[in-house]
Length: 368
Image (tube, rainbow, N blue to C red; front, side, top):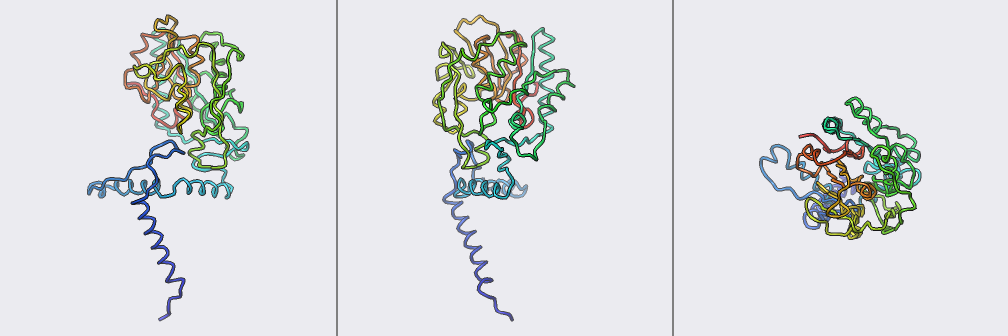
């Protein structure tokens, strides 16, 4: 019988040692449950049950826990991202590294959710118009579309145009925001637009919503953070990407506006929650983050026309501009559990404003 050489003996021993060490670390020294770099909770250790084992749920949950809570996760993510780029993929974690060193998420379209969202928007838009309410729909393009000039050369897609075409078939003509393509209008590490981009949208929507926009020189631009890493940076895990700067567009009296979030007065003054700048979700400085329903008034006796804004997080940077012209009732359908249709009788006009990423990748809006 041929004798086993040293390498044949050592290899299984090394593999067993690595697996044992990894298992012990996973059991006693797992990665923290909250990932600050990704701004999300990672998988919890699953509870065992015979039913879960039989149905496969337990093993699937354990696989996710193993993948997400591996000891040294942050360092391993950075190494993996660097390795992907070294192979020439120009992409990590579903996020593309653009030619100008900014980041853009690759669209991941869920057709079923997209159809439901568009059908819900069309239904409520038609209901508003039947009540005589001016109603407008606007879709914020993917950053990958808006900044297509700097994308890797192999990428070509037009999901926002496809969404607009589908709404046209449903009898709703969306207002185009496709001209907002300037680099200053978009965070380089995040999927949202900057206040510069929100201002461009504010000007584009003015002829339809019926106001005269304030000139750019009517705002004071104040930089409040120079170390913002957005959703793209958190998903990609690329350590060499430069951070963004968050610059607010302030105007005289903006601290006097009254904000109520889900029926309670906001715990910050005006439009900006500066404490969020010290967290991993710096974008939440705008309005303090997402809420089911947000009301914005100049005073407690604001008699201006009321705008019902059906929105996602893109509108957070836009609302301070619109609030100079309207009393606002802003509803994020992802977090609002009431009947949106019942609000139509309390407002003067309606605006849907959401990102293509929200409409095509999440359960954003369906009528009840």
